[in-house]
Length: 309
Image 1 (spheres, helix red, strand yellow):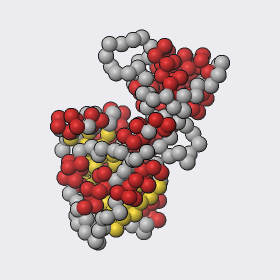
Image 2 (image 1 turned 120 degrees about the vertical axis):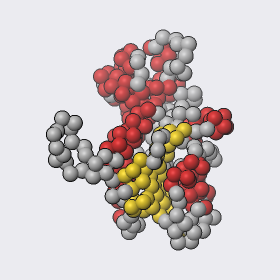
Image 3 (image 1 turned 45 degrees about the vertical axis):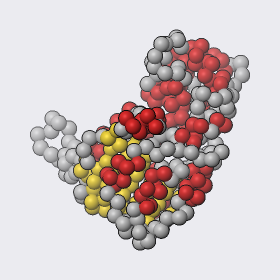
Image 4 (image 1 turned 180 degrees about the horizontal axis):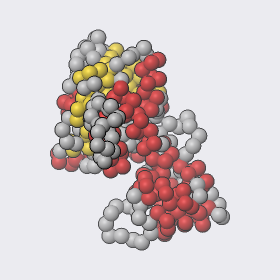
């Protein structure tokens, strides 16, 4: 299947990154290379574009899509949590700009056999990196009831998390739950029919995907490490698609933008913390015109900051 993914807020990303022609830029979530292509077109022959992705399909597509750029290009099959290791391997100390476009790609959702979508019946998978062994099958069939309830509640903000977890444990006593279709049917049977709020499986699928890929566990530290590798005046841009991601990005940026992080009841500062970044305005959202063209842009938020220390 051809790798198809519509990049969200492409013009806004270029604006906030303020691309320097001879700079070094890192796209930590390369996908098919949509954002990277736009960044790369702003770079001259001395510029360097580094693309990182843990999905082998994305790596293959990006290599093809970025082949005509005049700047230097390095594409790495890895998780962006290994940011420091990747830059060290390339003998790069500091960079001019960093982009993270979080969440699942359109290609991953639309490729039925990857098991990301509740709209298609497929094996329970949801691995962004298919070289890893741990999948949605393992979560659904090996986690105990309390653990399932916890991830559905925390990662999916699912109010019927207890009922769904209990139903999963009851059903799998007879035989393993092997497909997305089985899981969807189980969720539908465990929850009341609601007139609004979207498909009843949406939040559970989000929660399982986040758990399988460790998306939220790595995010805060990854952002902090990335900022440390920015040059003074360099910029970082992050696109999120749900409140859990956005809250982590917002809070991490706020902490790094503060001069003091002592508890409020301390009479004097003892932390010696100094602001590392300046936040570049409020979060941006997609225009109505873009949302009409690409409905997956509807929930997107773009936050950006500039390195000052």
